[in-house]
Amino acid sequence: MSSMLDSYVKGGRSRKPAEKQHRSSKAKSGSNSSSQQLSFLFVVNELLFYTDELNDFNRDEWYNTLPPRNCYGYSNETASRVMRYHGGEVTEARGYQWFRPGLCQPGYCYSPTQEPLKCYSDFGVFSCGPHLPIVVMPGDPMTIADGKDAMHALRFFHPSSNSDLKGVSQATWADGHMPPGGFPVKYVAGRDPSWIPSLVPKIFRNPGTGVSSRGLGGELPIVLGLMAFSEASGRVDEIFLGRNGHRGRWRDRVWTNIHEPQRCMPLHPGTMPHGSRPPIRDAPWAAGRRGGENQQLTSGLDMKAADDFPCGFYVAVFNDPQNPEGSTDDGIYSFEWESAIVKEHPSSASSRRS
Image (cartoon, rainbow, N blue to C red; front, side):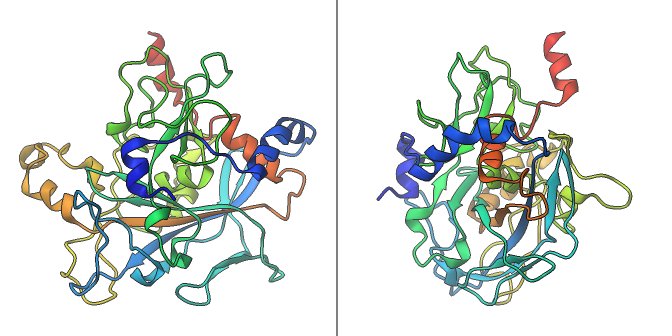
């Protein structure tokens, strides 16, 4: 069984399960045969950790602090409102609720008639410091008995050069689900993406390619999880739904935020009461880019960021029962792997042409 460390150091070839292979072969015909616009429901729940000094912190061989090694390392979660993506817009799915009966137990999304929804896909997405910026965990971290082998560094699959998707970066992990051919790598597919560094840390840039970036796709919960780091405070779902009369930051499949991520990293482990909710400050991959005393990565703040406990989100995507023809597994899979979940910002594309 491969560990997070194996994928971080060596990468790996795609091993797509039979279910996903079946989805891929049907996705085009399934999505084209329906006149209904794509929709799906999702939650983005902030994960809370035990942070007292007696906690057995999970670290790799290079002393990067990783997410908890099992579900007992989580103290709680802050559940978002259930949201609906439909035709390029995100709105609140009123009447739908997320409920988890207890720690180390699975959670469920319930319809207004109290029926549990079918989960299409779910991931934990974590920011773990400037030296290991993004770690992903397939499934629900709050139900995993041994999470060490479930942790993987973020990778990107590059569609082939003769594909219509050339230049699209597809977020995944070393042994993740992806189209056949090739293997995931440590850098994005295209040059100068409009969503770096506002979604993906600068360390993943690919300055050596002559191919212009054409967007970000791949595992939908990973992409949604990356969006969750953008705001320094407030409800995470407001990133998608908007607030104070302003629309959400992801609309018409364009990520409109241009600023580096603001949400992450609590203070040092041991500085807060047992089980308390940590304060929030800048995301670690944005460290050293504020100017002044914070300009160098070796500054006190940045070295502190390297030692801090991670922060993360549990993201789950569900089929939309109110749009059965437009919310099939094949349709969502096509959205992930046969298009760009996040298109390039129009202003970025025009500047590359000039």
